[in-house]
Length: 114
Length: 316
Image 1 (cartoon, each protein chain N blue to C red):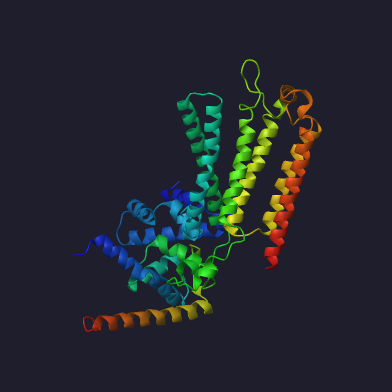
Image 2: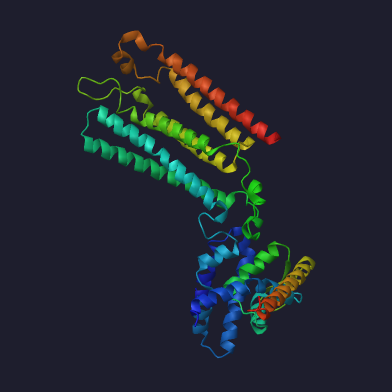
């Protein structure tokens, strides 16, 4: 039985890049911080708030997200939307992610045969 | 003030003011959204607030992440350079230690106390070297050229990277260590000449070489210029070559040092008259002129040499 802390550490490594891809894909429809946090959890990519909020700012700074304040409702919220560059990046990252998954499966199926 | 107010204030304190207008309402809305969601799910409002803020964690850490600031003094881009340079520079601290030890023995101090003074001096100089070297690297980590993020995440290292990563240095480590060593000697001489001298009063106190009026203002001013020169030398090693900016700073420090020395000598406030007298009347009257000429020649050579290197490397 693997030590749960070691497992958590490796699991975090594997998931690290997935939050960026999932956020860029989800924000093709504009969303705000907490809303995205819930959507990510619902989509099976849970992430901590203190990881997501800095990430959103970084992606915005890199031009992969654009933001706009929505003051129509009682609580003003900053809405993020994936830019065309962000969309293109997300697609290429997703391809990479899938290719990696296929490769891992191939390795797994060949296990012990080499 | 609610807990949320205090948390937001604590976070913003560590974020540049320019980002406050944007960050504060966003952070507030995110926290309030999270609390409301918990309350709607049936939690007690106060408990919900505490839980949400506990989950967000240390506000200083969150602020650093939000402002994209490093949470380390020296990161992987500079760590190895820092370590190598520090290891070599620390050897320099043995020089003043040895000087103090030798002068102590020559002056007839007890062997134990001479050794203790030497070790104490070496330890103090080592501490100074470690502090200033680290400070330079800490500033580089925060305000220096990032060496390109691909260096940190660019996959496996190959020999193809050797020339790009470690471009041939115009400034070698030996040059740097010798320069810092010489500067340490100058600093040690400035400080030690007050207590160690060739000539002594009848009661045994040393007759300083330099004019007593120089202490403390002008001696400390010269020491400050030497300290700036040490930092400059380390910076030049880190950059790998003399740049125009570094050459300008070098020119300023050289002119300042030479200017102070020449001015003091020209108004007869550099060499201690009592020292000249003790040396036997007129035998050392030429000393101020030699000091002026020597200082000007060395400073001019240093300035020209550095400018030649800086301009040559820029063309290269």
